[in-house]
Length: 532
Image 1 (cartoon, rainbow, N blue to C red):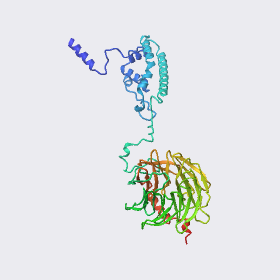
Image 2: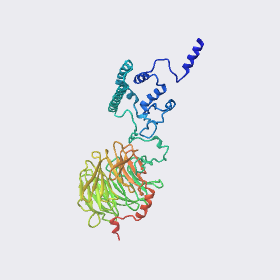
Image 3: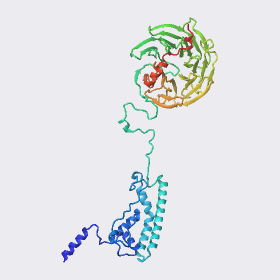
Image 4: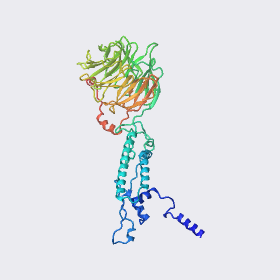
């Protein structure tokens, strides 16, 4: 008989859904206590009753007049659906702190639960079931209260919730770049800002400029309408054809003399050169021939500005002289508005005003003379807000009455002036010495050349003056800038003895076609219109 008993025990052990011989689990003890030790309730009913206490499914009950077979059928009531519409809720596990939730919930509740369970197992099995249900509901409410308190504490300590039902992705920082953008984009990167354009931040071409004089007060480079760049290197003046790349030496000064300023006439191949002796020379570059020498200054001529047949020169002696290149008596008038060297001269785009900047930190605006030639003898406006020498001057092409000026190392500001009423429009701290300014012809942008510490060219959006890009490459301060005839390229001359070309204002092809018909006829100066 012993072998039969062994086989029977083995079969009972292999039955997964059968009764176990070990001690009854805690949930079964609690259930037996709640049912007053009922001996007729089957295990299946207990299982359904236990599960439905959490899922909301009601256990089947016996109805008079029906057979016991109908009671053993499964209930047709479906579980309650989640608010989202699915049959179950799956939390966002990436944003859920399960460890903290489990620890805080069971920290105090575990001790209370053990004590209550011990009391429940030792209590009388004939206790009224209604009293037990009331006690269970009280425990459930206390547990829910504990969970809410723990969630609040966890939220305060961590700055978030324990269970996260919906969590949006955090916003990426401004400096973040998506590495997959290179895979799914074209070779030319597109700015992330809406409506902005791509600006290359590296130079397109680099030219050597040995012996370029590192002097803040000189203007040693200019770009002509015929696409020829004139640059002074030491005691020589060179011409570089930007189309063909041909280099030609125009002139060489005697020992001790040098060119201090260069300026092309608006139309033609006439180049004005201001030298260290105080004279202004006119050269016909097509024939490599000097046409004439115009004196009048007692010190070097560091700045020049053309207006048709009139060339204005600024000198270290603090005076400005207007020269009529057609007349034998070239000197028309002399202006004495500065106490120190005049290092910046610019005629406005409509040729009604002349702006001058000096080492005395002044910006003077001179209005056109009543005769239409030269300017008035007294300055229309005197701006003294700069705290350093003013060399960088630029007139706005689409607002002829707006003047931009930049100060030196002690000032570092770019200021905008309304010459109609003499008011300051805006002032921006550029954080470094401002050496040159240029307005774009195709975009409402301003480019500025700077010195220490970054020696960069900066493109600003006008009039908001939001920085668009920094063009880096020079290892020393950028002293001079000039723009190509088509307005797409800027050439910069630095104290590192290099010339760099930046294709930073390439026009939009669609916008270029629209503006071609409008700008087919170039606007002539008032002096040229007066010629019969």
